[in-house]
Length: 454
Image 1 (tube, rainbow, N blue to C red):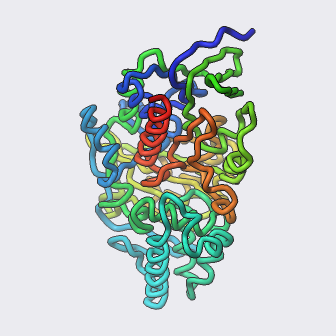
Image 2 (cartoon, rainbow, N blue to C red):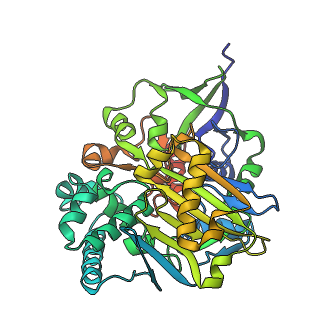
Image 3 (cartoon, helix red, strand yellow):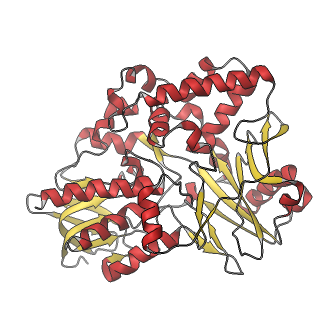
């Protein structure tokens, strides 16, 4: 049975970083809010679990950059302890079954391959700087860039197999998809929005620079706590109705909530599951249909100590392996244990998401053992989050446009639809895909709401 709608000033869909930040801004501005979250927890694509010794392990989003001023502001506001992502030591690159070691951000390659890679990255960076972050579809060469995939561009921009495979591996690591699945305009826009392509691929002073000692959820929990019972979990919205007076959200369990305005902070593919009445504009529907989630399974192996450091290894690996494409040292200072995090991305994630969890575990540990020795194959604990199988995300890190998407409907990505406004990291113009982007998007959406309600 349906219940009488519960009315508030603003409804917010999603209790991730964007939704909670929007709710906090509106509450502090004197508006009443209610946050509806389909999961039984807050955080969205941020999720922290605890090891047996209490060590916080992030199975979702976890990194901050020094450039992430909004996120760093919350860190300071809530006095959240942080530490630099461990990265000292030798890094590993595996291409075509060959493992090489290198220091710094550029891998050790034959001279012609290295020159080829460097010129391709330089060209990519120049192209990215020309893309307007707020309107990439208006770039001078938007049509040429959006109608080709990143794979097409990589093939034409490189002369050597090694350079080609390094760029493909970087795209998988950054976007959790295959280069063929992402528009070149999307890749360039994302790089410019995050300062540069190399910034995305860098730890120190880059996009993977800072972690939170108690896990990324420690950034959001104080926001949720301050909202008290305004955050409603286990609240999957199935329909949204709007008219000249307001909006109403109907839940799968029959409950209903109403408000003057609504902010949807869900990733666009998630919003596609909701029935809107009246129907959304066709270009907004196309956003939901044409953006697809990245595919990643994030695995963390816990050991009695970070033994790879004894061999001078940083724990960082980039690979074209058929299972794990990316690894980092996940050790938390003060923990009794060492940890490695492994990412299964793109085609590998789509293949392994259907496999039994024990088979996935064995395959991931085989990859880690190949890189770090036999000890890496025998952790004392192992946790994973199979994001493509998570029903309210169906992927991670972020939704993105394939070829043709920006030109088809990109201008509708942030455009309000009547009383419905759009947030979420996908709609950010700075640091999209990261917590910082989610916070920036929340600020834009709340500015729209407050302006409309003035």
